Structures are given as structure tokens and as C-alpha cells.
Image (cartoon, rainbow, N blue to C red; front, side):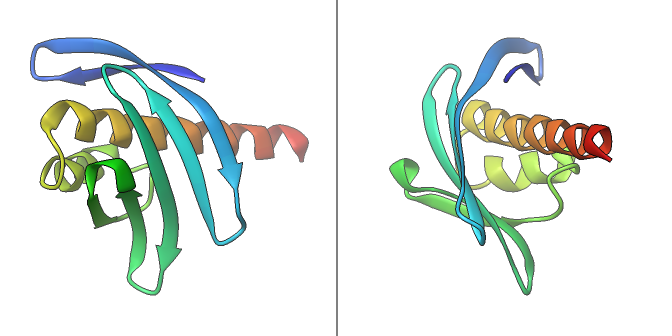
Length: 104
């Protein structure tokens, strides 16, 4: 799954190269200007994302709220990687939403 990322005046491509559903959480591997493993799941407080290679993690809201999630991720990562992760989650869940709609 490929997508474009935008931050201020910069634009770069990204790609989800791996997706694993463990039931209570998912793991994705994102390649763009960096390679990032993202663990994404839900708790009683909402959603979360952890990036173990970056020793970073934070609470998020639904994946479709890319703007809010980007700001939260940028606060624990650099702007480029935080933007990339937020965009990847947005694109992934929009893609899954369309797939479910087509199956019904």
C-alpha cells in the first residue's frame, strides 16, 4: 500500500510493506525516508502507537483523525517520521474500511 506524505512544504512517498493482525493489536512496517515498525492497538483510554526502534509511543484517537495523530506522534518522534506514521495509519484504516464495505 503506497501513499504520499506532506509536512510543511515537503513531500515524500511512503509504503506499508508488512501488516500483521494479532487480534488485540496490529503491527505494520512502514518504509519512507526511514523504516519504521509500528505497533498499534486500543486500550480503555483510546488507541496507541508504539515505535520500538525509536523508543517512542503515545496515545492516539481513531486512525482516521490524521491531523491530531500527527501532532501527537511528532511530539514523541521527529516531524517527518511522525507525519509518516500518522499517514500510514490513516491510509491503512481507510483501505480496510473500503475492503469491509466491498465484502458486504
